[in-house]
Amino acid sequence: MAKDKQAGSATLAREESAKKTAATPTAAPKSTPIRPVSSEPLRSAVASSLPFGKQNYVFMLIGIGVILAGFFIMSLDKEEFGFGFLGLTLGPIVVMAGFVLEFFAILARPKA
Image (cartoon, rainbow, N blue to C red; front, side):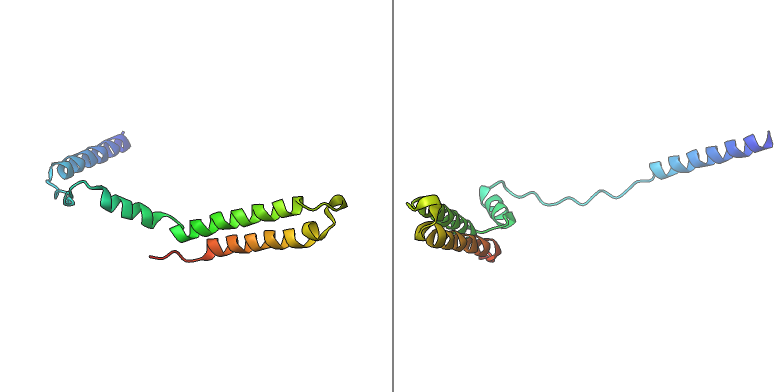
């Protein structure tokens, strides 16, 4: 029974200390000043959060076009099984140039 009284008094002491801390006034949180609503800061924040710049996307589209042109050149070969100059030499070189351009488009640092 003595143990129950000690546990009960500890619980009461915790409740009283919780009431005291709840009753003490706390400092009001700092508020940030309200800015007028405009779309201009929003656009600059969105543009800066994009991983690539406009130049990167232009190079990516050009690279995709060069890759597609290379595959089209390979399809123009009239030799049997595509074993002519267009299918074995020119087309693959153009496709590889497109992939190099894509690599450059990804790694190029966007202008600030």
